[in-house]
Image (cartoon, rainbow, N blue to C red; front, side, top):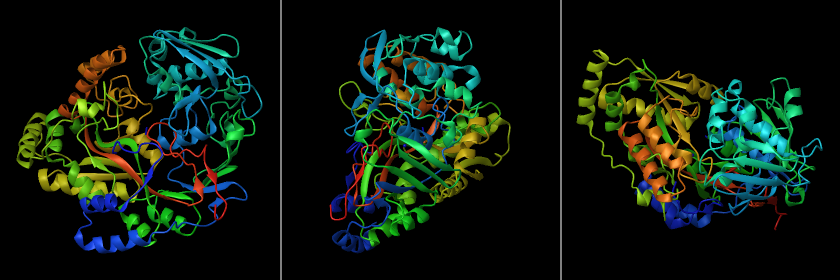
Length: 565
């Protein structure tokens, strides 16, 4: 899914002057700009006022970066879709405003070493008034595992008894170790120890699906507003594809009294940062992210700027399929030799909060007793152009080529994506003489090309699905369909098996440290940075939760203060 400093995870914070100045300076703004920045910091006001946060109607108006490609929770994989699902659907457990797991559809639960039992609320309802039952969870989990459904997230259910065999077509759906005991009791048997199973149940693949309604959509479930049945705080009131998506409060939600917003109106769908900053400036949207270009504009407007670490790691994915040049180990090592995450972050992106990294595992992950990365430091990396050229010569000899054909770099169609791609195009040409052909695609098409393998290099990232290092560790296992570059290494697979089959924290983290080492040494990907998000928000929009794990941004606890409130 789906993206970093460890501090202030969750709610987000406001920049103080010293932190912002330090990061802007590190980011390449230089000494000459500091005088203006000091002036701007001294004069900031709340900014962004307008009808985007309408107290009278309880409506917040927003911009969505991309069209949700897939709102079928049994098949959704991307952050945009999962963020929408987080507002209109609810699983057994959910995250509250303090990032603690609390009951969702389940009112109580017991999780042991080999099994778990959940007791469902009697007042949990679908948006048509039907009760949400244990059968709805069993159906959804079986559907996600059904081979014909081709769910890229089927692997996340593999900890349940027989789940992997069911997904491979080796066992019938009924063999899955999840069963309904009446309508309100769900029993789950584990295939192996699952010390983090409670965290898994808050992820969208574990959401329930109403079987009769699903079947009535004749294969179009999740494709439109009327092709979904909802059990979360909101429902989709209107979906104009490519243009807007409007959510309204769900009166049948069991905890409706907690929900203070009446409408979440994604009135604009655009990935253009200039467009979104102008919408915020005009009071037409209540929250928008910033990049290096519009950060300056935000300071000129004297707006209060917020930040938070969103938990994601970005990287250049490499295609390991046979026949692709990037399947050659020495070519990958050559690219790695000239790769410099620090240069990308501080001289190209120039956005405060982004942290260069040589590890797929972000700094906020827990280890045995403290931080995983403190206990298992990231591999050390120093760019070496001469070494890169030596490795390239060896790769060409192994490939039987006098020179390398242009490598296709698949990217999104945003200005930031294009800036990064042009940086790498210049870097690899200048350092190694390698030509890069940039293939910019809209979000949905980029995902499709990643899945089909139509690229050599892809600009990608991964955000955590649950609060455990395993959410990164199993990304490049041979069985994970989100491993779109089709990297396969039995040693990495075995290390992940150890980590996911033990309840001992030291054993688990030692195995995950081995995965970290393999990903760097075998150049599975070229890690770039942990993302720190910077954004502006309407001053009267309160209670929005920003978090690394779970729905982000989360408006289910948000409200709009009156003018002057």
